[in-house]
Image 1 (cartoon, rainbow over the protein chains, first blue to last red):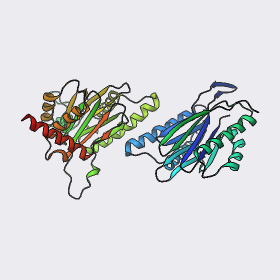
Image 2 (image 1 turned 30 degrees about the horizontal axis):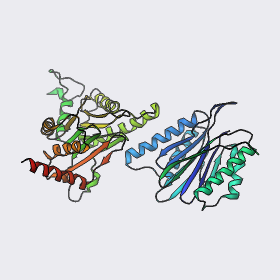
Image 3 (image 1 turned 180 degrees about the vertical axis):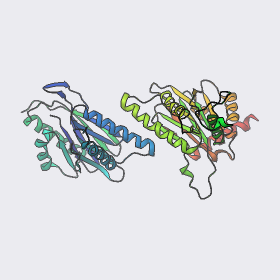
Image 4 (image 1 turned 135 degrees about the vertical axis):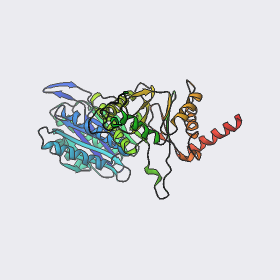
Length: 200
Length: 239
């Protein structure tokens, strides 16, 4: 039901998530923010089991901050992704696994932009673009067709719009709005919410 | 004399000797001074003289606990590391459970209760440090607290701990002005207080400041020297 998407450009990462918080067949909240700020240049997008998502994401968030306090500098996106994966993997074979699907997006001074795909079985993969949810089945092919590594910011937003239009057209559920954010060397920027209008 | 062996035993005149001795250890540590201004809080420490071959930067006596709180200590550095680490974890734990940053008083209370626990446990000794904890609460109020090995804590407008703490405190009592609006005045007061007891001036001072809604900033050596020169010129003008 929930949808996450990330697109990496030359010097930025664009991420978007839907804004619905649902309980069975009811939309409880239409402005839920599924992105968690781990540090000044790292975002964690988190969907999955209700409760597990916020619990796990906030736990990771505070541990990343603790690292910053202890060591005087922040974890890189790659280190943060691996730390998250390790935590998820440890909990997986315990009595209390977290059922969450994640995208971690960040910008590193030396390595540049990075997008990491993680699923509830604690698989971790660095990818140029990625998506979670049923919507991924509909949009990954669009990304395959139109993605280029040298996308500009505007082109990436257009590609994102294409994906969301496709969801609006073919996905059975109505996802009326999406939060969009962009990470580059200056940090995290909030972009305009995308709200697809009536299918053609 | 046998009353100073076990920490958990009172002496006939009501002393916990181990705690008293811990306070002696604190008096041997290098001086730290803290000043609470209206819009800025300042912590200054006397830099220990390092050996010729030792790298200067590895001796850090001012530690950031969270984005809104930081502290300095006097006494056993190794003991301080433990306290600082526990406090850092507690700051994040507080944020996780309550979604709000911990107040300066909360974290001071937490540190003090750890210290007190160690004065009442068998087989452990008290922490040999006093600490000065400064910061801003999320409502913008500045605070300065002092803790000592016994586990008590008090709020102060300005205070000093460690070697020559008495001299520095007397200087602060004479020169502290209520409602110091200017940040520069607050910083200068801390530096002047330290200069009273530190040999060879600005080179042996480490200073950290925090303005409301900003994170802790360690002043660079050149900035400290600028303040020191300004203070010297003011002194000369007066005499």
